[in-house]
Image (cartoon, rainbow, N blue to C red; front, side, top):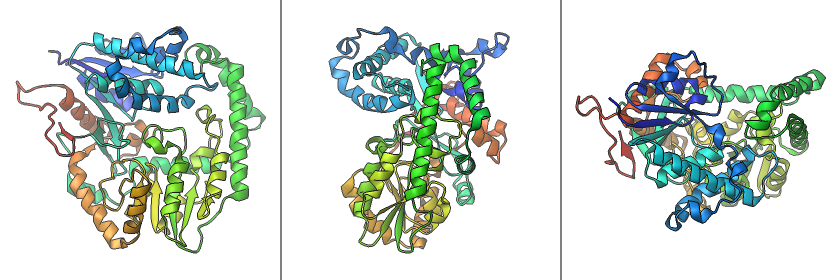
Length: 505
């Protein structure tokens, strides 16, 4: 018996999520999407149980949509509905175009994707439910997410928290809203409290990556490593030129890698000359930069994807005599093998802008962040974990876009300069005990929204639970949102019966 179509949009890029999705293969028309990273062997019997959706067909739709008329693609009454997606889409193109495209080409790609995805949705058997393993952040994912919402197709996003093995489901990008889904089997609140002070698998992985970036940043590439990089691009030249989203020849890719390497070395040299290596003796607030490009800024930070906007607002809101420390993210400069995604993310102009703010201090990427957070009176970030780490230590903080912990009174979301100016004095007046009380009460109140699980294999490898246990929990969530077993009374369907626009499964 089939219960409709389930599209796991990016699960093929995450083996753990792919395994969890296979639990639906015998009762739904299961479609699993990926970017060509999963090798599909003709002898694999499981391929008969699902369809593979290759996003590579949508990397450069503009290549063959030269005369696309937006008015013919999007009905006039829907133009406004697609504007948010257009903003996110344009900002995310730095991930995929090493050579910037003209504005007309970018718009052609945007409307071409809308045209293609709406046609795909029209053909897909209903009911259709869509899942993303992570926040949509590639251009084609962002457009598809909005096409689903405009066409009233249920779409859900797996989001990790910094609580060990705790995951929640969201139905939006959480730039300014949270449209959460209450799981049928949530994590027990007492278990959450037991884990409240532990380092989650996600945090542990992040720390280890940052430490590795710090070690590698100053190492020179050398002739042999450069030779290996060039050989890799040469070996993959056909894929890079015809199938990868860069769509450039291997020589152009090598040139871009050299350019990125020079940029990174220049950014690092600037920090070595001008960035502080330790905290000041007086009172200070701490702002942790995100590395870019990444989903934590585009799309999740919304307007504040340009982080200098948040930094200026926060610096202007601090009381006289308080310094704002702004620390670079170690991963931004730790890509020993040049990261082409960061080709358009030159940091020196950002560093210079920070140093022009009278009460701001630029801090080197490789200064220990835990020590800086521990000495701060206030923490802040666009959407990052510094605020959560601060609350664990009894230090209040604020974010500039909604996060999973924005409902905690000691770590609120501030949307603009006025709310920051109003909130900062209130947070600074909180004692350590008040912050910890807020934090603990928040965990108790919100545990019903979290379920046991993970959304990538690195978190699974570090989990206290077995892969099988985590997979069964994620599969249960997928099943509860897609398969109506009401006839056998073994499941429940999605119902809009919560407060604050949230949903229950």
